[in-house]
Length: 109
Image (cartoon, rainbow, N blue to C red; front, side, top):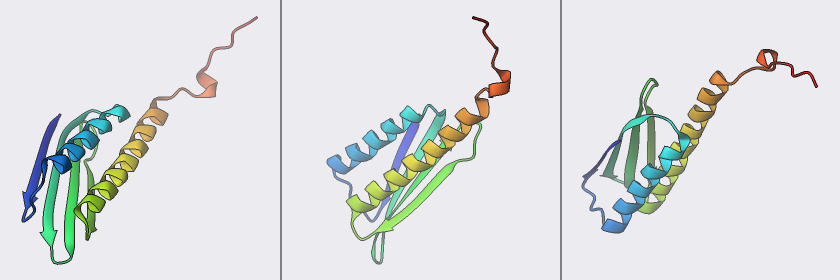
């Protein structure tokens, strides 16, 4: 998985960068074939804006945009929204491949 973190007019400290990288590692638990994660952070007139662009093999990319006055709050909200979107996609993929009750074999006792 390729990870790129880009900033514009914002200085990231080591703790914030590690927090973002740990959250991206946590995205692996959804067992989706995530190929690339691009994180863009930029300063705006009122606060900061963060964008997660998550590319998944054989699916449309998941793009999350979040703005807030505080950098840490924006990052946490974006991570929560990305996790929710990936969880929904994971559930959708699992339900698509699940077997129905009609397909189950009957076992005689």
